[in-house]
Image 1 (cartoon, each protein chain N blue to C red):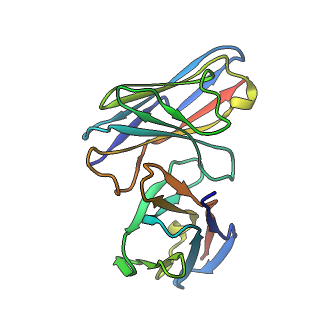
Image 2: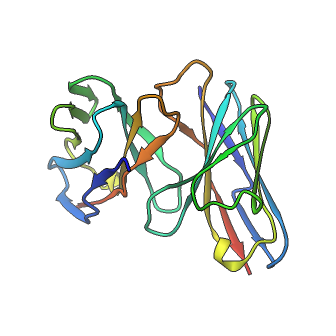
Length: 111
Length: 117
């Protein structure tokens, strides 16, 4: 059973600080990694994709992938109240069409 | 680009009736669409993978006779919840990946909130 694990939170971060979200996954034959943001009652929206080891930055967001340690993280700089949401980590495994989602981390940015 | 439209966004139906949910890729062709279900404060649960022109592949524990999936074209997949019961009340979300984009992220529809009374 392949698994994607996240701390469910809630994670509270003061406005303007850095929010750090972590995700670990089992099985080494992983191919692609994604972070989605989901507001309450809404469907997930893609924040970041990362395919190779290292960091990938997009605006206030940085995704970090370490395949050897089997973790992927998301950093949100200068956190804003609008960043308050559930963040879902998803992994696509080699040879498999579907994405496997973690349980999500609920993030609250405190003004 | 990569817009997925899902309809209806919200539906209330009586127990025993059937409900059809449509998922369309508006600006790309999707050979594969995925149907998810989400209970409150829970993560996404994959129900089935829908491939254009062939039978859907259902995840373990999902009743294929209850959740009928049809993917008749490269831009449309439908999920029909047959003989709905209150326990089928949930948030149903479709997603799609474009042709030739095997490693790309999924594009999600806006979801359908189903309430069975």
